[in-house]
Image 1 (tube, one colour):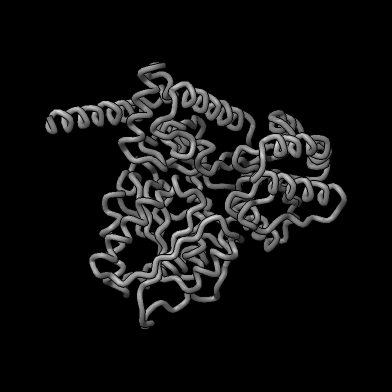
Image 2 (tube, rainbow, N blue to C red):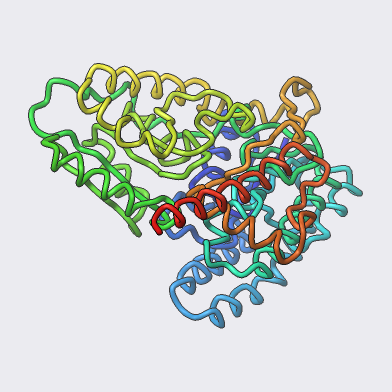
Length: 432
């Protein structure tokens, strides 16, 4: 069996998954049209076509730091080779895995692959399916309502197209409010995590401050300023902390820093309790603290994973808990290590994808998106999300939310917008 994986590599997800398939003896063809800025393993398939794709991918990656004209030029230059690749995939591959709404050549890949009876699994990873009005990567509190509406419609069109033609859909449950077709939650499949160490690195008995690592790919989205301020307060209270912040450096540098870290603080307003950075930390036995509004919301439909996932207002207390109780910190790191080493080993995740491709997956894996009523997304403070929602409804009506077939979710979104506005009005009147 030959499986094509493309055409992105989201935080090393696709490259790790390819390694898992290879361990199972499956012939894997992996392609990425843009070289990852953080230096994850690039595809290395032999042959002139794949070498040319690799060359243009590197040029597109380098152009990301320059003007849009250069990026667009290299994207256009890839079109002929992408058309050839699509024909090659149809003729030479047995199944296809596409991530983050990516394409081999065009949006018509999916119907063509379906016509050719190729099983296709499409995976969504967060911002590619999360409603833009509750996504800090796509919307800020000052975002214009027409921009948010345009992004929301684009996201809905993308999801519907994939739902129409894909054999199966994999998506992160707390960011799947706009889905309509039952899908497999990404935490059921697992996030393929390379085994970096053969056993957890010892974390107790060493003198000196506790080393806390924060490595934001996007400081605004990760809430880096809030995390810095939290650490500063803890240091002022007398806690011995060596705070390390890494940004804009290769993934290999992050892994090197993890070897000497005691604790990771990943994100403030997150719906991902064990994202790729936290999973990498777990592969070394380093525990992670994450905060987000999904932490205590059962309607986010999250599968439990071994991280300390708390509400944003509980972040400081959660860090203190692990600072003052090193045995709890080490135990959490060991549980995380055991989890990613067994449940999220690339081979195990690839085995589950094979079940989807072969039609042997358990029906119990599927989740009905209408049961997801978590309303606060990722990357935004509650009040910021409420403002974006309120502005969108004020300009374009409730229908602009795109969740009319999920009335409970629609009502929760409305309640957040209204209650936050009332709270602000009460605060203003009290101040007067």
